[in-house]
Image (cartoon, rainbow, N blue to C red; front, top):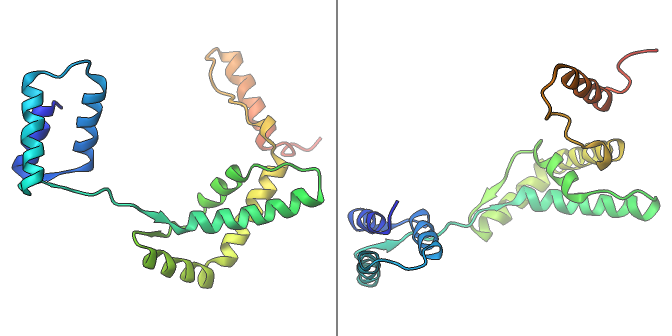
Length: 177
């Protein structure tokens, strides 16, 4: 979308959305030189913003309280394990695994975040600890060196080899010998 069309849309709606603002910024950053029409449109937008004819919609900040609770739990547990063993664990992988199995707890204000924290500690702390424990177990049993992409080549024999490798990684004790 062009600057002129964005400004026209903002004037029509009375709002400049974060997406519109970002697009204008992207166009300005990528252009070596703006046309007279683009400068005039930007001037019109600036005037409309200053007079209140167009209102810039603020970016809404969201907090996922579950992320901080899981990270806190994961860091504490990983620190315990690393202090008593030679294991080196990836906190990011552990947190991502646990977060994918837990409900998000979004808030838009600090008051809302405090409410979500209290609720989570009362109702979900055991589930959080359980998911972090499972994530740590998987991280220990499946270290980073086993995480190589196995799909890519398309020949028949290569696909069979990749499937075999995939099965060996994810189901190492499936077949009894």
